[in-house]
Image (cartoon, rainbow, N blue to C red; front, side, top):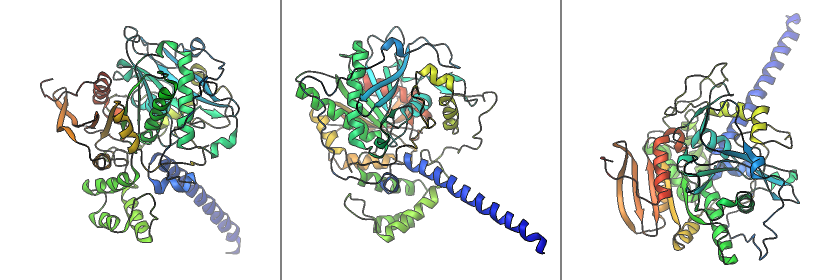
Amino acid sequence: MESNKPFCCWVLLAFLILSCFVAQTHGSMMREQRLLHPNKFMLKPYFGVDDTSLFEVIDVVDETNINVLIPQESSKEKDRIERLPGQPPVNFSQYGGYVTVNKSAGRALYYYFVEAHEHSKDTMPLLLWLNGGPTCSSLGYGAMQELGPFRVHSDGKTLFTNKFSWNSAANVLFLESPAGVGYSYSNTTSDYSKMGDRITATDNYVFLVNWLERYPEYKNRAFYISGESYAGHYVPQLAQIILHNNKKAGKTIINLKGIIIGNAVTNYETDEQGMYDYLATHAVVSDRVVSQIQKYCDFSPAANMSDECSVAIGAADGFIIDIDLYNIYAPLCSSPNITFRPKKASIFKFDPCSDNYVYAYMNRPDVQEALHANVTKLTHDWQACSNVITRWLDRPPTIIPLLREFMANALRVWIFSGDVDGAVPVTSTKYSINSMNLTVKTAWHPWFLNKEVGGYIELYEGDLTLVTVRDAGHQVPSYQPARALSLIKHFLDGTPLPGSKRI
């Protein structure tokens, strides 16, 4: 028996090492999930201070634009992408590169821009897309998994066409922000512990002003801002700065016409309550647990979470750990490995392992060279959601006052919701809009595409529109690309979605 002791010790040591590895891996996976999940209780442990003050207007324009216009090293032609590795033929132009947004700190944001098809790019509007997280990539999600012209094959090195790309409706600009997300970076590494809503909004505005100098043909073009999830903060905050600075300058610096946000974090209190009510009514979380949440949890911004609430929330989390909260009926990724040859792919059947394919593609040196990305040779991999941003310093509990401001300024405001998302579900969105006590202009009714119900719609006085997209998860264009394209076309045109089955 004595001779077995060393062996037993080695087995025990191996077990302990494996246990630590599993725990660290699980912790890392949970952190990634929590970065994506716009839940205050999940954000708070990882992003430090949670500033509950209302967002205030940031004034980043002076009379001479000295604080905004920054000398740039690149140009439109230098940023032109001739062809991405593994790309099918296209009939539009694409660009990618960096815009410096803070010269002293060395902060630069990466963008990817796809113009509309050659015959229509000069007349179509400019549309900015922002993903949320916070700290998730608009290139990795929006461009490569949702509304961009390509999707990545399972081999991680070739692309296939998205025939429902939004650049058939607009010239589409994808921005990785803030610095530390995707290919965007800061030469001042302490910036990564100082990120938040305010710095994101400021840098996004400075980016836009300087980007329009590089692409002057879009300066007077109708401009719209779109996004999803935590971009429910990013989009309205950027829009508010644009409105304010246009007014201060006494001229149109950016020709903003409207915003559209999907499955959007808008109002913490109703977002939280709506999530648990949705999960209960969709047979995910038990009625008993949700009744405990309703009894013990106070989701108002100033409230502290009681022990009873914490227990109830923990019980609810136990019901969702084995499903995809972002589409409660979708399969999980069961074969995450990159394949030698591409698996058969369909734009109508979203692959739950797409994150893995995009990660492999974005970290290829030839892809980065074609994109004009990673020019400073970052010390970390490109990630769909940032691992380098360590703190999120400010996060107002609601952006509803901004929506009211936009309505008062005659901006078009659409809020859309994939109806099988459990993270920021349609129930939350409805609760948030109901809290505004708006007058209904056109009552709830179905809209159609190809003689099928595409979802439901309700219009309110003041040009705010609520649209649901049937059988779509959190990333609506991933799961329902045709319905999403119809949605954005009607939003940009300012026309109602088809309310007749005959259309």
